[in-house]
Length: 251
Image 1 (cartoon, rainbow, N blue to C red):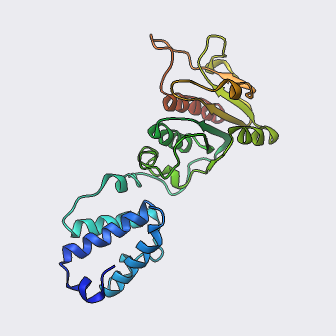
Image 2: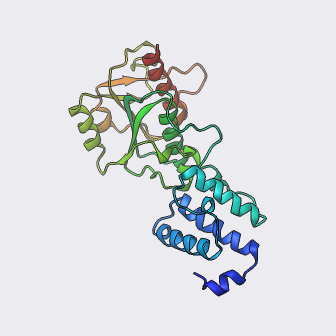
Image 3: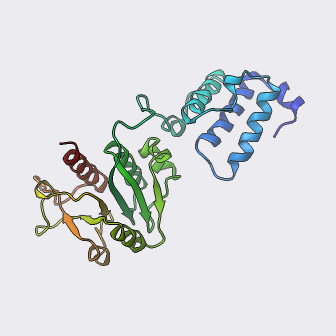
């Protein structure tokens, strides 16, 4: 952190660049650096005698992103992609409909992009939350955040050390445990009756749902393939399933 004399003596472009850098840390919640970045930003804002609208007081995520853009523009710089994707034009302050009692368990998904896409689809189709287990990436991973497009900020996300703890909790609370898998002997997603509550199980991109987890499910569905491929991307398949479930409740 600069001294007051040294900071005020720097070029205006350098001051604005530093303010934007600190906001980036705060917006992206970059670990232990966040409290330090807040203190440093507030100190510099006081030294620069910034107006209230350019301080952190009372700012939500979208307002901080706008403030970040202001400082980047003053510094003569463009917007960094990872920060920009924290906010998307057209996002609403409130959901259109209340979430339905369906959640998804994402176990051992290799791709951070797939995890982020699943979080985004959970919001888009109004499901109640995302559960993570195994080596599935956490919501603070930069690629997860990029694919989730900010949804990780408001969608309930919980990590479980053991996927069976998640499955058993949902069973005890009246949820069907629904496997989304491939297979000729699995019911077509277009021909099933959805329960009132469900936990959707997604498998690994290459290996599918582990046999021991499949054995714990109480319902199985598959998406019929019309082409030569026998399966599709797991995040895309989840989006189709989430849409089908939401549509059945909206009908």
